[in-house]
Amino acid sequence: MASVSGFDPLFSALENSVPGRIQNYYVPHYARNGKQIHVWQRFWQLVKSPRRVQYQEMANSPFVECRHEIIAAEVLSCAERNPDALVLLSAGENQFGYNFANASDSIRRRTLLCLHQPPSWLRLHWRDFSTLNGLGAIICFSQEQIKFISDICTTPTILIRHGVCHDFFRPTDSSSANTPPRLIFVGQWLRDFDTLAAAMELVWSEQPETRLDCVVIREVRNHPALLKLARDARVHWHADISPETLRKLYQQADFLFLPLIDSAANNAIVESLASGLPIITSRVGGVVDYVPEATGELCTPGDASSHAKTVLRWIQNREHIQDSAVIAREFAEYDLDWARIANNLIFELHQLAYL
Image (cartoon, rainbow, N blue to C red; front, side, top):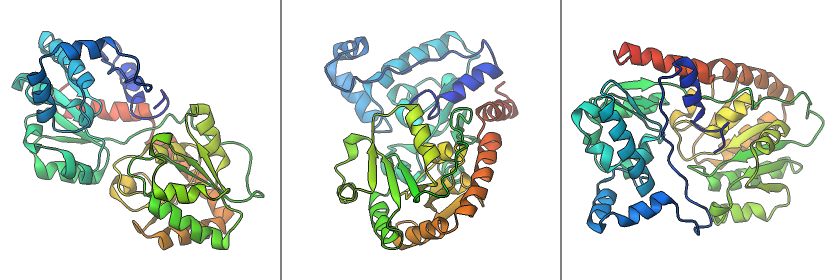
């Protein structure tokens, strides 16, 4: 994730809305080559082994790591020194581990938890939903999440949209009407690679000139469906690219083609909308909240034929793509604007008497 992708821009927007009232704590990243050992890793090695095991066993999510627990201890210490402060966890699946689950009631009542994963993931992996009771609020990104959280705990919920930096991701002035159809697929988390590969075979049977750009990190390219796609020279692979390169790929495409297994909010979808790119994806989870009518089309999950027929219909109507691109951009500029989302969140916190 870069500074223009993902959820982090919300905090910049919050800082602009309430200047001087935000204190950020950043979780350090692992070194990809595995050779560097950071200070926080050395510190964790000094913690007694039984306590480390306890942290790992008691964390609600398999995403919680030692670096998250160490930062959690710092945040909790800050919250104790500042009894009127709210604690906002930007990614609860990573950050709501043993320390926060066992924090004092006075701090838990001031803790706001953002959950990014769909209910299917939470059903599979979250160990103890009772730990969500007694929090200040749970921030959700789709109506499906709201319903699920309301069914499993008594904590208030707040619905906001996942925004996009639409001043960075933007359309290009050039037109691709006279070029071969070009689709883009972005990401790996909860992506349906099998449906993607099968659907493209059907698309190529009728539109053999169609090109596909796949932005997929190298670490997950061992999936058999991706290997099948890689046999075709019409597929172009991208990894370790800059935000500017990603933006250019969006701008060169006719639309985003993104078969999904499930979703809450999705970076590729909001970035494509801001780029004036219509969306063809699966009707799953929170996608319905982010692909309004006329900005794209939702297909039957797991059905390659449904996806392929939709792609072919859009390819054959390039003028419709141009009309939808305008609506997609307008939706991103207004409904997915981070400043507007930050103000909506602040309003919701006022409604809950937190501010």
